[in-house]
Structure formats: C-alpha cells, structure tokens
Image (tube, rainbow, N blue to C red; front, side, top):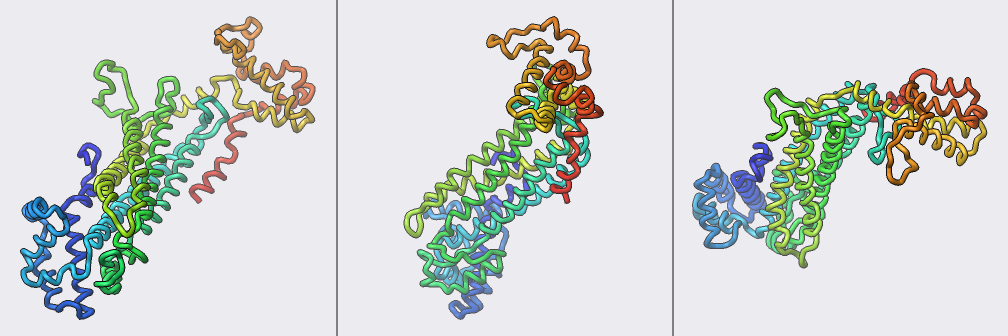
Length: 462
C-alpha cells in the first residue's frame, strides 16, 4: 500500500492491529459458544475477554512477530502471545479449530469492511454524477463513434450513462459483499469432527457473517474471485469515464477539462500546459485494481480440502486492490465535481462539418419517399463527400491530398454545407421536393436529435 494512493480509513482495515483484533474476537466468541455448549468452563471464556481484550499496540504486534520468527506460523504466534496475557485458561482457546478458521473468517470481515467503504464511495460518486448530469442535461454536443463525429447528444446524457453504469456497479458490490461475508469455524478439513457447528453459527452471528455451507477447511475461493472481479469491473467504469474526460480535454476538442487550480503547474518545461493528470492517474490506478482479478480467479483451484497457494496472493492484493479502488473512486468523484464544461465549444465542434450529423436523417427520409435504402445511401454519401471536399479534404485521394475544389468555394459560405449540396442534387429534390428538403432542415436539427433526452433521464433517474 503506497501512501500516495491510500486513504486512512481503508488502510486501517488491513493494519495488523485491526487484523489481530478480529482474530481475537473470533477466538473469544468461539470460547463463549464452547462455554454455552459446556465444552469449556464458563470462567475460562470469561477470562479470555477479561485478560486478553487489550489493544494491539506496537509492542504487542512486535511480540507476535518475534514469536513468528521462531515458529514460522502466524496463528500459533498470535495464540502464544495471547496466552501470555490469559494464563492457564488459554488452553481452552482455539478448541477444535484450525488456522483457516481464523484466517478465512478474518479475511471475510476485512473484505466486508472494505466493501462498506467502497459502497459508500460509490454512493457519493453517484450523487455527483447525477448533479452534473442534470446540470448539463440540455447542453448539446456531438456524439462520436470510432472517434469520428456521429450524431448529436447532450453532455448530460453522456454523464447519465456513466451514472447508470456506476449504479449497476454499486449493485454488484452489494452482491459481492454478501457473497464474501461468510464464516468458517469447522476445524480440520471442515468436517466439524472436533467442534460443534453451533460454534460457527454463534461466531458468524456475532461478526455479522453467515455460516459457510461447506468450508472444506477453507472458504471456497469462488466467493473471493467474484469480489475481486466486481472491483475489476468498477475499475473499468472508472477508466471509461476518465478516458472520456481525457479525450474531451484535448486541445483540438476543448469540450471539458479537469479543474486547474490557481498556482497549479502543468509542465516543468512548458508553462502553457494544462494536462489531464487526474484522469490519466485514474487510468493507471484502474490497471492496478484489475491486476488482482486473474490471480483471484486462479485461487479458486486448490488441492483437495486446502492448500495455501492462495494465501500470498490475498495478503498482497486484498489490501492493494481495495485501497487503490477506494482512492480512485474518491479521486474520480472530486474530478467530476469540479470538472469544467464548455457548452459553447461543444456546439462549435458539432457544427464544424456543415451539418453532416444529419446524414442518417436524410437517408431515412429518402426511404420514406420511395427511394430504396441502397440508392438513398449512395445519394447521401456522395453529397457528404462533397462536404468533406469543401473543407479541403479529398476522401477519394489515397495519398490524403488536401485541396479545395473551385466549385466548392461558394459552398464554404453556406451555413449548412450539407443542405447546400443536397439542394443541388436532382435525385434528392425529385424525391423530397424543394419544400420538403427545406422543411427537413428548418429549425434546429439538434432539437430533433435530442427530443428524447427527457425519456432517457426518466429511465436513469426516475
């Protein structure tokens, strides 16, 4: 866990003090359950709480580490240090249990604690996305497919799409939390031979978990794989939104950008730079989170009832992935909250190619007036190519030669170059008539393309 990309609340979950505290509670609750069943004396269970329930200070943690350096076993080291506080009654601790009962149940608690923070992060992000989407609901911009101008949409609709995605991600995280919140106190190979299943039920209830139906000494790792896979999907959503902002901030686009604070510097060499550093950083952080997904999937396959090939993976990616995702969600929320939007630039970009965004509308209108779809496509496309040439771009030249045709100079003066060329095409005017074509382009074409924005917002926000 790198402090630069960490927040204290999440890192505290993976701190040794929290881990050992959870280990203690597992053992102490198990003792209470054993005492209720008459397996161990009630006074012994009481002594565990009274003598062992102390903060895990740096000194206690170092003592556990010291013992582990000798025993090479973390749970034994923990139990040995605990016995130094409890005394003779410590012989009743860990009755019928195995190390995985402690380790896996603790990991379940930590993962649910982490999930709660991530869910809260998503809630905050959703609030910001909804506010910004509503703010820019009617700010028209060009939609792009393959990076090329397509048809108009609104910036609010763009953000509404990301809102809907993160709402699904929240639902996925809630489900992943539920799948991970299981407890295993079943003893060696999970057979309950030396411990009553009621102990597991008792500990699970105390820790807010559910008993694992079949633990085979370890909790099945498909649960953990689903959890990390969910985080990977969330990371994908973060990167998708961050990538959109990066593209919109490009100098040639300038439709939106990250907030640039007074005194902020963009480049050590070029003082004019305003770089999309937050969204680029989020792209990198998303890769770190997704890096945990494949190892988590591979952890599903263990030998027989258990091995520890999963252990090292989880000790690394458990903290790293959750800490990184928490930080990334917080950073994304702040970035969207302060994001600067330029509706005027959006409209200028939309109108940059003389109305070509209405090509499908003309195509469909021609088909409704008796022209075959194939012929309609050819008619519209040849006029669209004339528009490209009027901008000095020859789409028929394989060398990409830039040249402006003399006959296109007059078109360059037209408000809608696309309409200009269509109105000079006999096949178009024959099918639609001069009046029909003018009616098609009368008023705002963007209003036609955005007339169902309210319907989209109702679907997304209710």
